[in-house]
Amino acid sequence: SAVISQKPSRDICQRGTSLTIQCQVDSQVTMMFWYRQQPGQSLTLIATANQGSEATYESGFVIDKFPISRPNLTFSTLTVSNMSPEDSSIYLCSSRGGGNTEAFFGQGTRLTVV
Amino acid sequence: AQSVTQLGSHVSVSEGALVLLRCNYSSSVPPYLFWYVQYPNQGLQLLLKYTSAATLVKGINGFEAEFKKSETSFHLTKPSAHMSDAAEYFCAVRGFGGGATNKLIFGTGTLLAVQP
Image (tube, rainbow over all chains, first blue to last red):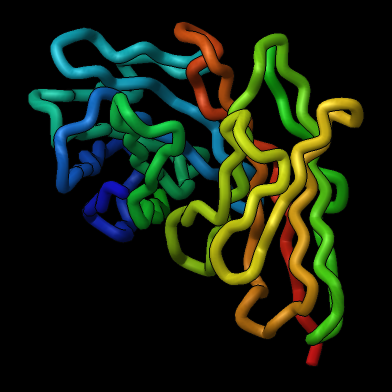
């Protein structure tokens, strides 16, 4: 199994600012994913980030709001841009290696926008 | 399109009682199915997975689930609940193929409470 380190674990941010969340995997993985979990709700996929290509965004999510980087096979970042209180959520990084059927998750970043 | 439906957003059981969390799936291709658990203020931990091998899957912490194609179900059970089982449980589906079916789709979650 992969171990995923995500930071920061939590943050309180002012509206209009941006926050970059980092995700580090302890092994090389083909696919990395970013999810949002709004209070009391399930996980919604924001985008899939494959190394060497542009991230693929799900319906309702756009690159200008959630730019993603994937510089190598062990690291990715998600930026939440121009934040508003509606962006207050838990953001989770996930990875799946080519030989794995299951995905592994980081501990999440609990974001509060005030 | 793939989806999962979890019946019951909240389930409460007594310590020592049977735990049954329900999950029904919809998939146009042979699915992979998963149960994840999320403890308060933590990420998701894989409990068990179905990958088209044995239909009865055993996972960690005494949990198991049975894949029933005829009922399109993958319910999670544990014979005897423990206080430490209190958490939120998510059922998830992923297609066998590539492209859009390769995404992990989550159910809405079931919050399990265990009463002493």
